[in-house]
Length: 152
Image (cartoon, rainbow, N blue to C red; front, side):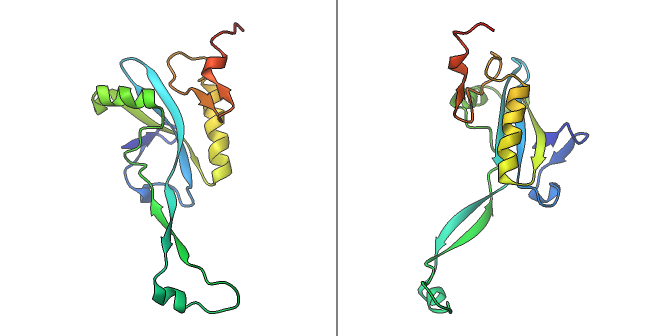
């Protein structure tokens, strides 16, 4: 179960609970006893390419090449998602789910803004320099290890 602190603790248990035109969300999952956390983004839907049947290919009309695939949009695994950090996932396996707090920080309407708000949340929380945060890179360009030898 996901909930949002930006919207007075609205619980999101079904995809229909999200506002219309929601593309994805930025989340924070905190292991409450240790205060260790992870901030990331999650799409609500993903696209799957599916091969067309011979009948579907034959039914295509018009000039040009016939398409051999169609794109189907499916709901993602957002309900059960815990992030992409291997270290954080080890923590999730080690402790009961009740010890974790899942929060939605931002609800976003398109892909570009999803990336923007993820970076914004990670930088606002100083993820690369916070020893409690499991985020080890921002945009694949800035890494936590780059800050370990530097003093501000």
